[in-house]
Length: 290
Image (spheres, rainbow, N blue to C red):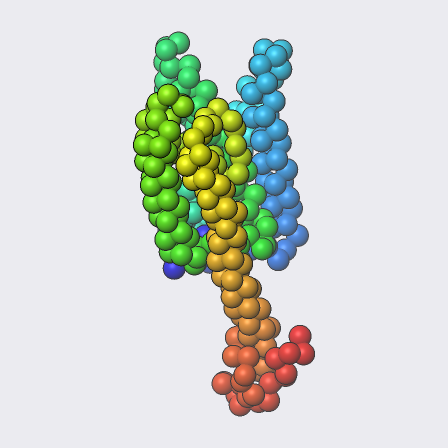
């Protein structure tokens, strides 16, 4: 299962405007399709800039009306795109529940939700919903060809990463409990959660300095945690790099297989080690000549 890959979608109709828009939106091998993608990329980047500018207090006060109009303009554009993507496919629900459908929905939902939250007491909620508009930046990954390989590698390494994270959490709990006993409230370790916070900061080799061990044993535990922190950086990197290399090899083999078309009958999709066409029996070109 590859949750970050594009869902397999079919056009709702074989003719008419829905088929034409399906080719423009979901195919990327024509000029109209490339122009459509370019317009969306520009709109996404511009909308993110609007969100960033809107978060600056004095700019928001000075340009609030213009920013509000721009925001709703982008919201209408992305809403039209989302509805169009649903309208032109045979099974709209398949797209709606895919990772890209969810991202598209998250990019427009905050604007509409903020309309239904009345009262000044809800200003914090409205602000949170407005900040959620930065989810639009995730829409850009659809237009980065290599993002599929990166996300697939991340998904494949999820079990190993989860085991690693469980180990880190275990170390954090043990170290926090130890430091609470060793140092105690008089040295800033007022409780186990606060001590766990110190352990996370120490293993991340950040060292804010707000909680500092004073005893010799506490400093020894700190030194051990710092050494563990350096190894923690290397472990997930190695796990992900191995999966990335494997995924890239598979993608390369798939590209070679797809590129091996029969020069006699035109059938594509032959295996890399195939010598003859499975349909007509004609000799195939070398897989490594592409």
